[in-house]
Length: 84
Image (cartoon, rainbow, N blue to C red; front, side, top):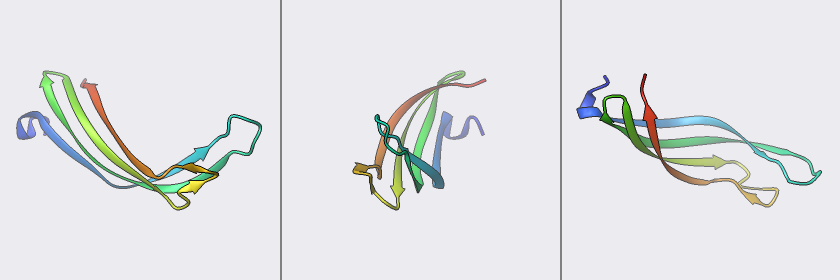
């Protein structure tokens, strides 16, 4: 499946469990909150064992304003990978 779609490999995260930790920089109490993560992205093999990719992920937490910190939201990013 390595050469599917000329090196283009899409992927999805239909749902993943997350444990979000809010740790204040003081001597305060560390708080945790469970959540779920959804995402999608793709990788493209550009040269033999090197690939580049991108992803978009949404992290949904039941208490989105935990201890005054907003932890639900989107995350986008890029990657460079080395296959072996």
